[in-house]
Amino acid sequence: MTELVTLQQLQNADQGVTVPFQLEVPGRESLVCEEIYRHLPGKRLAFRAHWGGLDVLVKLFFQRKYFDRERSGLIAMAKAGVPCPKEIWSLVDEAGGYFLATEFLQDVVSLQECYKGLSPGQLKPVLRDAVALIGQLHRAGWMQADIHLDNFLLSQGKLYVIDGGGVEALGNPLENLGLFFAQMTPEYDELATDVMDAYGESALSVAALHPSIIRMRERRIQHYLSKTTRTCTQFEVTRSPTTFVAMERAKRSERLCRLMAEPEVAVGQGEFLKRGNTATVVKVPGDQNDWVLKRYNIKNFWHGLSRCFRPSRAWISWESAHRLELLGIATPAPLAMRENRSGPFRREAYLVTECASGEDLAAWLLKRGDATIPDWLDREVHRLFDTLWRSHVSHGDMKATNLIVSGEQLQIIDLDAVQWHRRERPFVKAYGRDLQRFMDNWQGKTWQHFEQLLRPFAQRAGITLINKKV
Image (cartoon, rainbow, N blue to C red; front, side, top):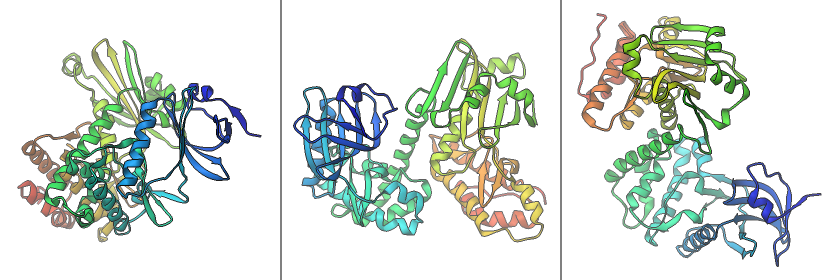
C-alpha cells in the first residue's frame, strides 16, 4: 500500500522523498507518484504519476512565479508549432501548491544520451531536427535561455522540446545557438556547419557561429568551475581558519573524508610514486580502485611567501581537471582538494584523483619496438592538440610521463601548469611550446611520424618543429 503524504510534507521534504506515495489533490483524483525525476527542496518536484487511468508528468511548484513561467513557456512553444508535452490539467491549491500535469512521453531518449551514445554521423540527423526546432522557436520570437541537450527528448521517432520554464523572449539568436552547440566537446564543432541549413529562414552565418560556440563554451566552463570551489548541489566545500576542502558530492565517502581530514597519515602509509622538492605523490587504497594523492610542498620560507596569496597548484589542478573533462580530454577524475591555510595565507595543498591505469606513452611505445604506431593513437594525439587549439588551452609540460596509455585512450596528467588564455598571442606561444615539448620526447622514425601528424598544428602556431636529438 502506498504511503499517503500531504502537500506540506512534500514542501518541507529534503532530497530523501521515497516512492511510491499517494498525494491528495483538491477537486481531483488522487495522484500516485511512481518515479521522481527532479527535486529541488522547497521549490519544485517533478514526477511521473498515475492519474485518470494513464501516466502523466506532474510538476509541483511551491512558488507561483515558477508555475506561471513553466505554463506560459509551454503555451508559447505550442503556438510556435514546436512539439512539446501537452497540458492535461493545472491546479492552484490554496495550501501553496501549484500543479501542472502534462502528457507523459513514452520511451524517451534525451539528446544528451544520443550525444553520448552515437557516433557523429549517427547524431547528425537528430541534431538537424533540434536545430530546426530552435529556428522555429526563434522565428516566433522565443528562445530557451538555458538551452541544453537534456531539454530535447526523442519519443517514438519524434523530437520534443521540454522545460517551458526556460522559455524567454528572444535575445541574441546567435549566442543562443552557440550555447546549444557549446554543450558538446570541440571535436563536434564542425558538425554545426553540416546541420545549420536546418535552421531555416534567416539562416545564421556559419562563420559567425563558430566564434559564438567557442565564446559560449568558455562562459559555460567558467560558470561550472565557479561551482567546484563553493557549496552547491554538485560540490561540498568546508572551510575553517586552517583548511579549505572541496569534493564532489557524488564521490563523497567515509574513506575520502578521512583522507582529507588526515592527508599526512595517508602520505606516510601510501605507496610512493614520486618524491620531489615541490611535490610528493603516493598511491593509496580507494573505495573501489586506487587513488593518487599529490601533496604540493612548500620548499622554504621564500617559496612559501611567493605562493601564499595565490591559488595553490592543487587548486589549479582541481579546476584544470574539471575543465579538461568538459572539453572531452581524458584525465583521471578529480575527487577532492585541500589547502592548508593560516588565515588568508595558503600553505601545503593536496589533490586526490582516481589512479590512471596504464603506462606512460614513451614506455608503451618502447615495448612495441619497431611496430607501426596504431591509428587509434594517432587519432588521440590529433584530437588532444586539436581540442587544446580550439579551446585556447595549454598544458605546460608535455613530457611523455604525463601522457598515459589506458586501453585505446590517451590520458593526460600533471595539470598544475594548465592554463586557459584570454589573449591570442600568449596562447599561440604557449601552444607552440607544448607541441615542441611533445616532440622532444621522440627520436628517429617516431619523431618523423609525429612530426608529420602534427605539422598542420605547428603551421597554425607559426613554428617549425625541431628534432633536438639528431
